[in-house]
Image 1 (tube, rainbow, N blue to C red):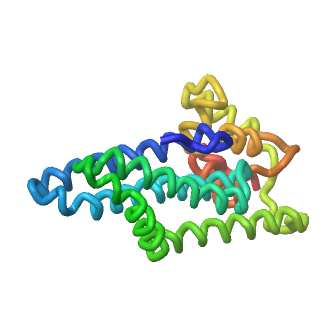
Image 2 (cartoon, rainbow, N blue to C red):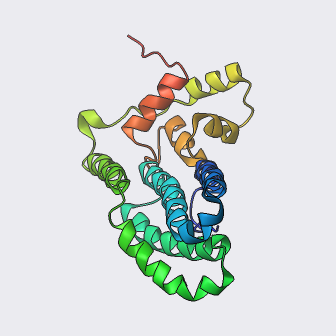
Length: 210
């Protein structure tokens, strides 16, 4: 599976994990189906695609929260990702080569089925939160703007954890390198949400003075 060229590298491992989880689930379902698999293949492929798609979509929302992507970029990327994923999964996993003439029918079924997937609500909720954070930042932030510049606190934590680079620290904290650099810096574009900042400060055991 190909990621969009501008998709943050630090967000790929969680998607990879979702892919492997979906692969395992598909293999288990295939074995359980036994001889019936040829009749249930399309249903199981749809389930596989749904799991992988939301594994990517959740991280796409995280990219917006960290400032690497915009909501518009996510809305462009998700339909294409779904289409490419469905096409590859069908040809890779369908047991009957002669059924490939049904690929277009499967694509139509996927588009229709995907509209009712329950995971969409969480994706749109995440995008809404990211948009509200951006709006607050654009308005000057007021009380909602996070304090900037936690370089010393992060470096002290890195020393305690024996992490040599910011890249290693970002991976440990499950966020992009650019987001961690933004948290450490008192200048530049804000590349993280308030929720992300609070999580990071908790993980590095930061204690507010006073």
